[in-house]
Every structure is written in C-alpha cells, then in structure tokens.
Length: 446
Image 1 (cartoon, rainbow, N blue to C red):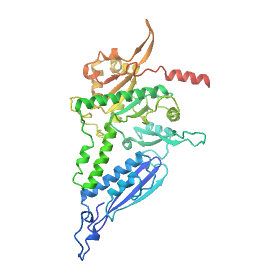
Image 2 (image 1 turned 60 degrees about the vertical axis):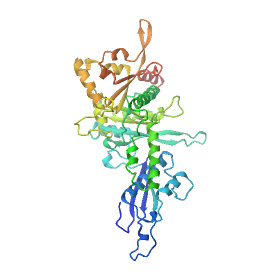
Image 3 (image 1 turned 45 degrees about the vertical axis):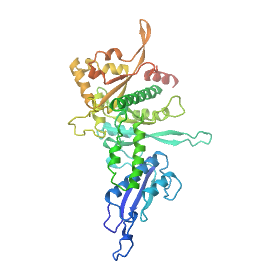
C-alpha cells in the first residue's frame, strides 16, 4: 500500500499451509527523517531517499520469494530476525536495508480455514467432498495428505508420514499446475501397482520434457526471466537479490522438474449410480496407508487425490483444463498453445492401462464411427491432452504369455493422433497386480 509523502508504505505477505497462516506486516522507510519541513539537513544519501514505486514493489517481491523459500526449507514457523545468523535473516536485512524499515510477524496456528467460497469446510472428509459433487455443488475437489511425524518414541527414524486425507480445495480454488500427471481410476482399492505406474509415467514425462527442451533450444530461456527483467529498474542491491532468488526458482523448475501426480476418481458414472460418499471416503483414506515411506517402492513427492464429476476422458479434459492457469472457463476459444514447433503444448497427461487405451481408440464407443473417434481425440489434443500407457502381461496366447502395451493398436492411428500416446515398454513398467485380485484376497481374509 503506497503511502503519501512523509508516511510509510505498508505491505502484507501471507503464507498459508496446513499448519496455519503466517503473516508479515511490512513497513517501508518513508524518507521523512531526511526531509523535515524546515530543511537544513546534509545532502541525503541514496539510502536516505524514499524508495520509488518500482523499488518498493521490488522489495515486496523479494519478501514474497523469501517467504516461499523459507516454507520450502521448512523454516516458515521460525521467527525472522534481520540481525540473525541464518542465511534468510541475512537476505531479509539486505531487502529491508533502510533505517525506517520494519517487519512484524503474526501467526495463526492451526489448520487452514477454508471459507465458504472455497466450497469445502475446514478438515472436511472425502465423504463430504463426494456429496458436494453428487449434489452438483462442485465439479472437482482436491484432497490433500496431511503429513506429520511419528509420535512413538520407538520410531528412531522419526520420518514424516501421511496421517490422514483432508478435502481442502474445490473448483477454481485448486492450485492446479500445468503439465500435470493425472492417474484416473476407481481405486477399489488403491494399490502399489497404481503407485508404480504413476512413478514410471512421471519418469516418462520427465524424458519428454528433456527432449522438448533440447529441440527448442540448447539453452532454454527460463520462464522466470521476464520477471527478472521487469524489475531491472529497481535499486541495484534489491534487484540483485531478486535476480538471484528468481534464478533459484527458475533452476528448480527448469531442471528435470518435479512432476505433480493427481490420482483422479470420478464419483459419478455414465451408466451407473453415483459412488456412495462413504465408499469414496474408504477408498481415499486408503491412500494414506499406501503412501507410507516405510512401504517398498518410492512415493511421488508431490501428490494429491481429486474427486470429479467427469467419468469420460473428454469431460475430464474439459473440467480439469478450466482449472489450469491459462484455461478457458468460458468454454470458447483455443485451449492449447503452440510450443514453437507446430504442435499443441501438453497441459495434462493421463496415465492409462493398456485395456483403457484400447477402449479409447475403439470406434465402438463412438457410434461405430472411426471419424468421430478421431475427431474426439483431436479435440482433446487441442486441449493439451497426452496419454502415457502402461503395459501388462497377456495370458492364454498360443506362445504362452506376452507383454502388450497398445503398440499394435496405435499403429492404426494417423500420425497426429498417434503422437498423443507415449507407450511404456516392459523395462519401463510392468507390474502384474490388479484391483480385482486384491479384492478377492481381502475377501478371503475377512
């Protein structure tokens, strides 16, 4: 908030997490001490002159970046001290480098409170989230893992574990990233095969990103470089800090990059009654146990469960695409954007099993019309949809069992549609486990 001459400008930086909200109330030096009405002071130095508007914006941008980095490093609950010895304390002192600058920290400990416009109550369960979708009050609800440390003294590792699943965001309030990995399924129950397929697909997506980056340029321009240049007119010291911070953020995301994995479950069905909310809760809650670090196999680093009202892939592409930055909530215009080499930029990758992939390209499900099938896939391609397909072992063939991943079926597709599919080979993924077999095992033990 810009102040009038002689009055200090104020700004507020808030960082909300599952652990609570921390707010920094910042007041910037007004320069008034060096400009009294009577005058008579020595020539003011650079740091005694009030910051320009662009310099104030640069200082606040620095503080936002600092808050994000402190949260990333697990220090968001620690008190800041511009005279402290921690590296972030030193950065704070360089950002607020005027005599009249000040910062006050305020915290609101406890779970993040979701207001009514978010559509989900604080700590809501998956059952409540499913009910909202079934009643038409939401299209998508994100359910996040609440992570904590083991409380038993016998646990020497004291490693973080998923304690429960809570519905926290709905529809446009979901912080939906682009180029996200979506693993759709009924998850009855979720099992290690789903996790293994998600990890194999994440590795495939990282390979695609590297290949695309090498095709576009030998040295890709950081997506954050424009933000760095936009504050180049700021004070030299503040601009240097901001440049370094944005470069750190750019390097983090421009590397092979973390892949966000969303396990998607539609609670509505095209030809069946909606899923019972309590059954939806049972399935979602099972993810907490499945994602335990103590279990064999790595766990996706950045994951969540989303409930939707989109049983068809065309509906999933439409509903989820509208939540992304640059989406088209109005339903008109172009959904994808060019990546500079004549193709539509990938925005979301659905992870499929071979059987699902075969059904997607089967004209039987499009009124026995191959043209309608291709038109539907091309429309999804325009929305930035990609498919990553995991194979399985097919039993009962003349030569015994064989590995299938949809390669034969994909060969019948035109090149522009075929490029929508990345088929994982047997070395990249094969895990012979099914939800049906697991349900049979569970039934035998009950």
